[in-house]
Length: 296
Image (cartoon, rainbow, N blue to C red; front, side, top):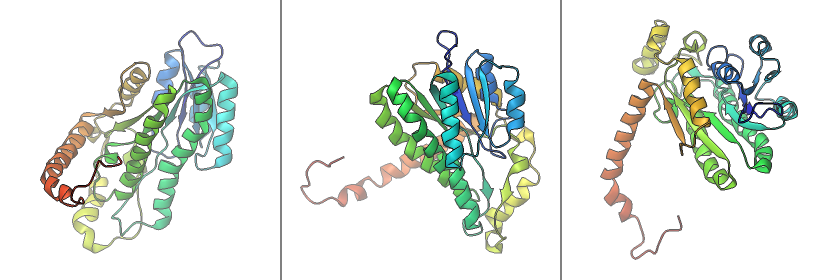
């Protein structure tokens, strides 16, 4: 999350970056580090305070580290109050918290996919709702929701993670239509495979079901052989790209990061267009004859 500094240089911004301990986040808070290096302010929130404290120690006037469990209402409310109090407002919120569990839809445990949605979707909703009153009052602010290429193009074995990102995408699409008339912005970041160490943290959920050997079984075997070389994305370059978009006037709602994300999303869009064209006659055949103009 980016927060505006009361004593900042002219034009500087305050970012508040909300992560989650053990989550899919860029190493050592790459975005927050980049923001601080540019002379802007940054509030970092996560359950593990130590790595954040080590970073902000180098930026005592512009950095603030907060202990935050994004799934706890009390933690979220306190973080927003502290950020606004320290830096006189929040300019940019970055919802960066995310966890993942792997396994076929039928294999995964309910407690795991419910936890996944609490972190990936409901916590992001709560945080953006928490910062919007201040942003509306100042008629200034940007909300960045970190999605994924999986939020556009789902894969087998990762269905619940994709579903949480699809939900975040749909919500953000409504959000920007609601807040742009108020002078605010919102956009999605859709990264591909970045070197975040996710291959070391990803867990499988539930018991193996032999019937899914061709999908879930194959993926389980592949995960054991993953290496960082198979993740082409550079978190530092990604941080720079996000920062540039925030500080530009580009009318952008989706920022795709990574060549793999660009290819996968492109293939999904091509498939949608093909099926969209193929179903046109069926779609129109279901209207009442002579029906008037649709409400939407």
